[in-house]
Structure formats: structure tokens, C-alpha cells
Length: 291
Ligand SMILES: Cc1cc2nc3c(=O)[nH]c(=O)nc-3n(C[C@H](O)[C@H](O)[C@H](O)COP(=O)(O)OP(=O)(O)OC[C@H]3O[C@@H](n4cnc5c(N)ncnc54)[C@H](O)[C@@H]3O)c2cc1C
Image (cartoon, rainbow, N blue to C red):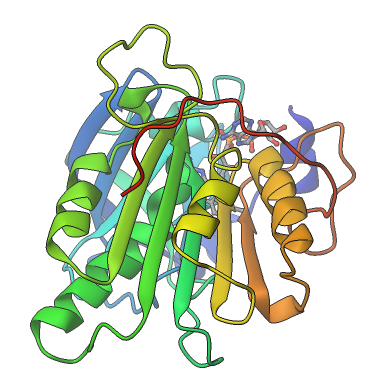
């Protein structure tokens, strides 16, 4: 049994039926050997706000193994979409990786999370920074605003700037969709960056980690603490490094940085709230033309 399983005791069957839907997988797409997308049908009402996560679970050895997963889809879609990374030694992802259309997965009836787009605090720029599967809540923001934009319910007064980091080009999952949004929408900018480009001479985007290119794009897009909220999602090191960079740029009050930490490295004490506040990185990448 892993340490994480020990920390999160499995749930009994009565709780399971009360708290979970038996959702069904409707679609699967693989982006690489350890990255894939599932769409599922809850079979009943599942109301959520973009940026929230669902708890998915599967049974193993008679026990339920639950984990949180950010929702990729918009509430207006009739299915719920997720973007997964396989953790080979993990308790749940090796089981999720086997799922195919038609298979059943438990999904907690209520979504959770407060990693929401904040349009109420007077700052109209939203700097979204993520690694690999951390793009999930941001896709949900953009799909939702796009729909509202088409319907005339969003006037474009809030601007979203997304820095999407990965090791290699095939890890992005949503790059094509987000690039289309960038081209079409005056209120959305998208930059993909890879930290290990050497096997991909044809990679057209940025090079370096998302936090490496943060300063450059914050300058280019004129994102200042008085007009911007930063949202950090995914890899704990990216979150730690980005926070340090943002703090040095003056993002000091609590409302100016939001984070969603996907896991805590075993070497680090578990934080009371997600993320830590130290660390720095210098840019090490080539610099293609800014958008
Ligand atoms: C709010 C929230 C939203 C999340 N959304 C997503 C999402 O959209 N997609 C997604 O794939 N995951 C997401 N996660 C992570 C997810 O909940 C699981 O932790 C992850 O899938 C691993 O589960 P597991 O049972 O296979 O591994 P576990 O048995 O839980 O973990 C085994 C070990 O691997 C470490 N670990 C966990 N995830 C990773 C990782 N990605 N890379 C390296 N080490 C890791 C753990 O800290 C632990 O030490 C999210 C987590 C949180 C808190």
C-alpha cells in the first residue's frame, strides 16, 4: 500500500452509493503513452462552475480509490471531460488508464474547488500558467467564455493570457483547440512552451518551462499587479517558481495569485494551503517572436 492510500482511507460501499454517480465513459483520446482524455456521462445532473474539480473513483480489491480531477469541459456541454497523466506507481491512474468507452467510473455527485475565474475584483487581466494536465481548468474557462461571447453574454472586457508548459510537444492535449481560440478571439492569448525540444526540430513555439517565460510575457502583455490576477495550476515546482517570480513583480496581496497544486512532492512538507512561496528560475530558452 502506498503512503497516499494510507493517508486517504478507502470508503465503504454504503457511502459510495450515496455519494457517487455511476458515470459512463463515452469517449477516449490518447495524446501519448501516458496522457489521455476521457469524456463521461454522469447519467444525472452534475452542476459545476469552470475551474472546479470532480472526484473520480474506481474499485480495486473491494475498496474505492478516489482522486480529484479538474474538469476540462464547460458546464454547457452535456458530458464531462478530463485530461489525465499516468502515474505508473499510483493507485488510481493505472486503473483509469484501462478505461474505454462503455466502462463505468464512480464520480462524486458534488464538484468541489474554488479555482474559479475571478471577474469581480477589479482586475481585468487573467494570467493563466500551467503544466501539462494543469491546463484542464483553463480550457473550461475559455470554452465557457467562448460560448457566452457567441451568445452576446460576454463582452470581452476580461482578457485571458495562457502560458502552457510541457516537456515535449505531444504532451499538450489541447494546443490545437487553444490555438484556434487565440486566432479567433480578441480577448484570449495562448503560448505553448516545451522544456525538452531537442528531439523536435520542427517545434514552432517557445522553449523553456512555463515559469521561465513568465517574465517575458508578463512584460510583453503589460500584466501588472494592479490590473492582473495570476492563476497557477499543475506541477508543484512550476507553482513555487512562478509564485516567487510574481511576488518579485509585486503580486503581493492574497487575491492576486490563485493556485491549484496537483500533488505534493514527497520531499516537501504538505502545505496548509496549496503551494509554497520560495524559489526562482532564470530564462534558459530561445526567444521566438512574441505574439
Ligand atoms: C484539485 C486537483 C485537481 C487535479 N486534477 C488533475 C487532472 O486534471 N489530471 C491529472 O492527471 N491529475 C490531477 N490531479 C492529481 C490527481 O488527483 C492524482 O493525484 C493523480 O492522478 C495521481 O493519482 P494516483 O492515485 O495514480 O497516484 P497516487 O497513488 O495518489 O500518488 C502516488 C505518488 O505520485 C505522486 N504524484 C501524483 N500525481 C503525480 C504526477 N502527475 N506526477 C508525478 N507524481 C505525481 C503523489 O504525490 C504520490 O507521491 C489533481 C489533483 C488535485 C488536488
